[in-house]
Image 1 (tube, rainbow, N blue to C red):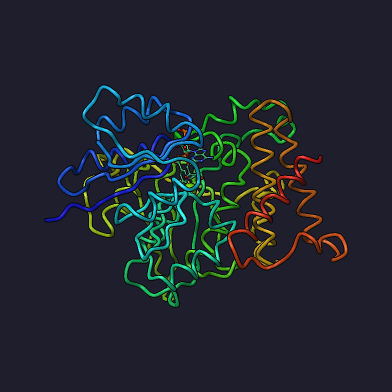
Image 2: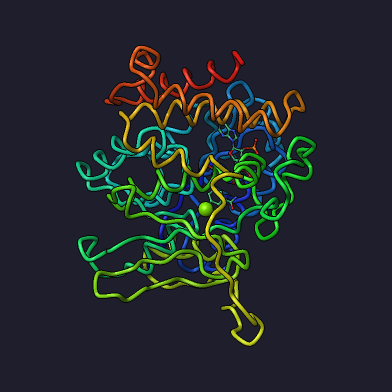
Length: 380
Ligand code: NDP
Ligand code: MG
């Protein structure tokens, strides 16, 4: 049969590497047509040598340098750069497009990147409906919901239960938060992930963003989305149906599983991961989230009641705070303090927030709202 043609944006990242493993596992099913990387040109080069994609997109200004790496070969990928390069590979190559894409050519998009849905969820979902594009959620919780939902209709859902590991500081007293270093915050107990999402998991902002992501993906009102702490991270999320049945998806914490589900396009293919062994699990535990210690989690519910831009402003502020914390210029607690201040302004009297709250009708609106959040965080 004809091989499925795949484009992976962010192929040099953690999710990208999970997708590449799945392709490696199923050489008869997939052909990697195009990839993108940003700064990690060594890894991108080795990906190109292994999979021989036809096209590659790299950071603005690095295409020439990258092309020279293949001077002495008879394999020469077409090389594109920057945002235009990403658009090019996303729209012109492949049946399935990876995350970070704006690809709307009626394609199937396996989307791990939650920030894009937080920035412009309505716009993305409307565009998908209009163009016939399919969005398959690769974020493990949303992938679990999607799998559990199966052929059931969203009207039959009573509520969605998003599970969370609780992050590295689940049991750390709040009084000790001020001394937390980026190295400590990056050590996630269950998942190995990129830097930004690891910090988001430590602040629980990740789960907050995921509540917003779920609201858009499954057209759910916020009151139908619940969060439960499940430190073993075996159940990746669940759907409670109106008849009282609860359907959950289980597996080890390995992004190759959701990646395989998305790349397979609902056809089961090999991921290289074995199913969980029930005898080894011993017990699964569940706790209510501690909203006082992690107020970040609550913010999603308030934000979803505000005009669209609130989520994008919040996301921009968080991105800026995470990068400052990673650079060592602000303490861990400053992330909570600044997001708390922004939450108070967004939910406060109209004269304080009217410039921050508006409807998002274009990608430019979403980017602008995000920039407002970045500036807010940078100013404090
Ligand atoms: P990584 O930091 O590991 O990878 C990021 C990727 O994006 C790299 O390929 C990087 O290139 C590229 N990149 C970074 N900045 C830019 C830019 N400005 N322009 C173009 N490309 C860029 O992140 P993850 O793989 O962990 O996460 C990616 C997304 O998936 C995030 O949105 C995250 O929230 C989401 N996600 C991740 C999960 C995980 O388990 N890791 C789980 C669920 C969701 P290079 O390295 O070459 O510079
Ligand atoms: Mg997740």
